[in-house]
Length: 508
Image 1 (cartoon, helix red, strand yellow):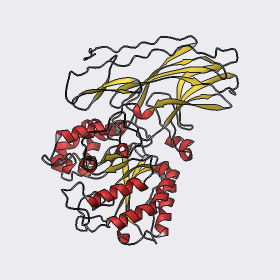
Image 2: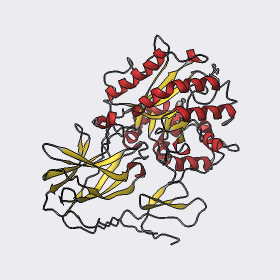
Image 3: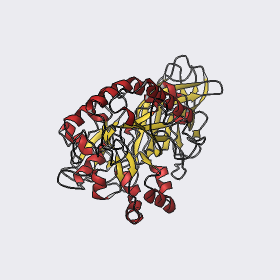
Image 4: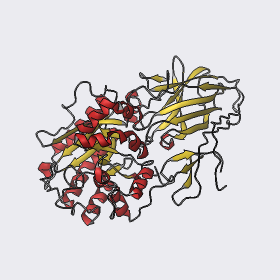
């Protein structure tokens, strides 16, 4: 149909199956807690050398990883001493030591490499040397991809921000042959399951010669285009965030903003503010929640620039951002088979809402866990947590899960588990996703209590019956518009509003 009807009430409809229990949950959108791959970042940077190769090891205080906001660090390796020579083995080994140190503290990083750290020193490495260094780094990046949240392109310009550069064109250029060589080298040598973020969105559009943002179909597909995003190190500043949202003819182009708002449903976004004047900060600091929501921020530097970050603290905005930056999943209700047979199936139906500003971006398999006093069994779900859209959109898990034939008879408590995708971190609860509900989180195991049990018995039916019908929120849709469209994700229809926001709707 060509238009949708606005329903002013929330419709909840479950068709109950036999042998099923219904559980409701209490959302919690006030408690501040850490979750992996989101939140405020601490920054560590250093000019490394063969005799002093570490940026992380030896530079973490004992309480790192214990603070409410702290699951991420922003780590910058300055290769100032190696602009025209190979990285020594000591520096590469130091990188590996740093990554191991992160695992001790339960941290991940936003990673960047650079050659200069001031506007006055714009002499960076040539493309030949950047390519050579990336080839050297490739096996070390692959071996430590588990603790790399995302990679910022770096290498070019002061602080690796693709500005103030001697080898890659003037500051108005987003793309040229040398910049293209570095992009190609980054994707040739970075881990294939990690995103690479560039300083300006126009770098991506000019690299591909295409200003169309990612679609739901291409998002999270693993293609190079689906892994290429942007970061904003001039958040809230003037002139379109210091050119972040600039196009050739405008310093703050609504079309570029729209592009970023759509792209960041599928690629991470973050950075830092650089507003250093107190008077300027006073004008813009309060915009942070709205803009982080609109452009789906998952990480932000907590210290620089203090004119803004201090104002966030004094106003209470800092705590708001601690709660909502990145993803924040609330369980709403669930329906589960209360009987199951070994070798049979059980129904698992969960409605949830992502109250955060952003999705989760790196792949993460969800499991329903059956646990009793002696043993636990993790059963993978097909649901893709990356598709649980932000800003209050409701999503659903609605699956029939195979029960292992070897599962012993007995009564099992049910949990939802979202561990890290890498086996090296999967058993560490610090890297598991905590759901934002009262009385569900077990910090010792990383499991979220679903408040339901299932009795496994050879006498139980092997077929649990049809899955229930799940109805999600009905929200206002749009009339015909050149920028409005419908998308289907995980069986749920969404309408893309003219302002870039997405809403789930009923029917087609």
